[in-house]
Length: 140
Image (cartoon, rainbow, N blue to C red):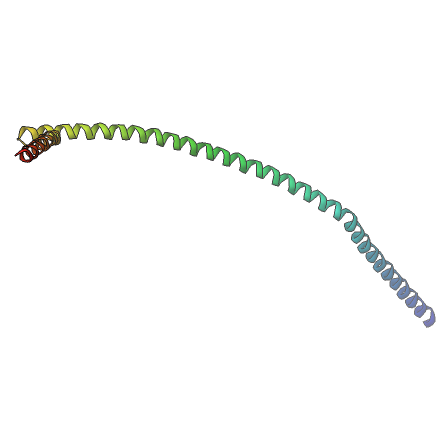
């Protein structure tokens, strides 16, 4: 009877070992299958990712170009407004300067200080008199 029990244990061991080998082989084959599938589908998946990336890049460039164009348009508009405003300010400054000059000249004239025009007129008359005196001095 000892031989029968031993035989049953050996048969059970062999059956378990066979099951383990079979399972190990299935795991090995599953790994090879996964590797093969990744090799085939992986390159296809990679190409899909590349296409998706190109699409996103194209859309991104388009959005950036639109934003840049809008910003440039706003800058041009602001430049135009500034130059218009600058022109108006220059006109106003000219008016203020002329009004100031007129008032200062009027105040100086009231207190008896001659204007630039008066000095120029007097200088011209003085030049005429000097020339006349030189002619008279030469004749004598």
